[in-house]
Image (cartoon, helix red, strand yellow):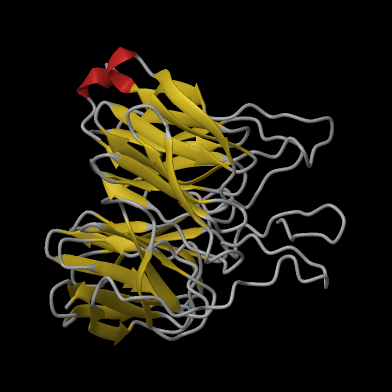
Length: 385
């Protein structure tokens, strides 16, 4: 496939300063106060937001529980095995199910098949009434949300394998693996499905694109090459969701770079900047946004990577991957707040408490508002007043 056709563990140690990937944060131990979460301050409100609706899916959440939006429905899951489909405008339940296992990742859906993953690596597919279609075992545990489409359910397991299962039968139809480094993050990565291609990060700071149907590898690109003399210094996995702004494909790595490839020219790197994120990035028409390891949020120009602004008022608040709502950029934090910043200059516009403790899952932007999977397993839509 020609790329011009694309439309779209570690715990932080006291001396080593490692990264808690599954916590979605950049918290460093120590009692000298340097890494204490920023205290929230008052500022002139520049945006009026409110909770549009809130539903309790189940109990428990995590970085692997980003909701999935298909047409006018949103699919969500909770760690206790609850899965549901809801009207994205009203929050009304369309169906709900309670599985007999605890989950580590979910959900992926194409509107016909919805997939989640149990703690032991069992991939569970449900039909669009909430009934279980099949269960199949991945080769290892899974903490990355599945994706569903083109007749396949795709997961990325902890042994660095990307695996596809037939969406109707659960049969494994292909498997792609790359050698893993001596030390790797349990990174809060996600899988993108664009125009029949599976695109995701693989250990060593690389992106890979795979034909969703056949499993043939179409392309590999380096976001950030490992540096340093120790295994710790060379950890640099791609984090979050690779995002597309045709012809650009952009990604960010921990201890690496933020970078955009030009897919129309075969995957040539257009620009890159030294940068390290723990959670990933998002984009709008003109900029890419990402919190760094210290939770300072930066905006980079899509055309050339120029740094347009940095907002550091939320440092060490364990921010989530961001989402764009209109002219604002939203992030969640460890106390259950969602913060909004101006896309043009990064100034703080608004914040709202959604409850449930730390928000780990990525925020998801929709035409209706921003979806938040809270720490206690609720699903919230935040809307503009």
